[in-house]
Structures are given as structure tokens and as C-alpha cells.
Length: 259
Image (tube, rainbow, N blue to C red; front, side, top):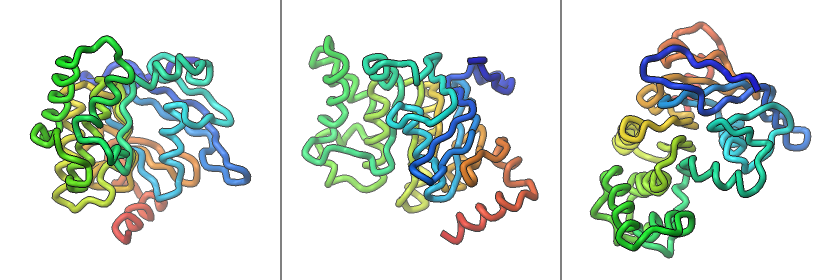
């Protein structure tokens, strides 16, 4: 596949995700209709769209949880469709996934939730090394004092932070955030947005942020794309996208605040 080019930016490197002509349907429902997307090293890209527009389907395809019907997908210089099971598992270790509902194990403490992916995937680590890695991840999200708490004892914002910490524990090159501010109050949402920026700066991650929250997109992303009726509208900076006279963009802006 011909490698896509990223727009010149002194802070951005080569493409880490390149999608071309991607289609995905479920029965007679056409969800993605030939989308193209490039994400560069160190770049945060927001994917906006109404509920049910296919945003979450897109990131599930990126990590190989769903297969596209047609198109090409290159992630970290790997053609995802050509990978066998072992190779796909190895690729997933380089990608952090922050789930919308945080997906913490209720029966495990915060420490155990973070240690679990390490002990499952990095067999040679000593107990001290695991403890150090968990401490570092918790410190990165500002919750170093919550290691012994159970998920039920945490606020919604704290659970979001712990979910991000668990995604960071293996030091991924790519972060995928699925509705990171959903269900949070404005102050906590602002804290999560700040954390996403801190993760980008500290770990030099490349990120796709799936959201319908315009404030999140504006405050965290270098570039914004909008998914409408299975296709992307032209991407750009937040002000560029929402400064156009495109009626579909205006409709989404109104939809966002009506919701």
C-alpha cells in the first residue's frame, strides 16, 4: 500500500495509522462507506459523529476486533488484514484502548487492575518492577494514592483516569479513546481533556479520540474529522471545520448542544 503523507508539522512524524477505502456493513446496514484517514506520530485526531455513526466500529477495526469488508488498513507499518493471531496480539500490545465505560474488573483493586496486563503480557518482570510500573502509571494520571481502592469506591472521573492508566501501563505508541468524557460533569471532563494532552506530551502517543463532545475535540486534538452517513467530511483544525458553511457541520453543532 502506498504510504499516506501527513501534513508538514515540526512536531509530527510519519504516519502510524493509514486507512484507505474502508467499508464495513452489518447485514443491510452500511456503516462505513469508503473512508480514508491518516494519523501521524505524536498527533491527536478527533473523530466526531452522532451516536450510531460508526465511530466505535472504526476503532474496533483498527485493533482487529472487527474485519472490514473492503479497503486497506496499515497500523504501525503492519497490514492488519495480513496478520495472523499471534502477530495481531503483538500489535495490540502497542496500542492502548481507553474504553467508554473504563472496563475495570470490579473484583480487583486498582493496583491489581493495572498489574494484570503486565503480568499477562510481560512474563519476565519481577514483583518490584510491576509495582514500579503501576506506581508510574498511577502517578501519570494523578491517582497514586488510590492503588488499594476498589473500582466501586471511585468516582466516574477517577475510573476514567484508572482506565487510561491501565491503557498506558504497557507504554503504547497509539492511544484509542472511546468517548473519554461521556457521562462526566464539565469540571471532570476538563480534567480528562487535560490528562489526554499530558499523555500526548509525556508519552508522545498518537491518538484517535472518538467523541461527540465538541469541547473535548477542541481542547485535545490537533485535527478533527467528522463521520457523517458513513463518510468523512474534509478534516482540519477545529476552528477550520466549524468555521465553514457546511450544513452537515452546522447540524452536528446544533445536535451536540441539543443533546
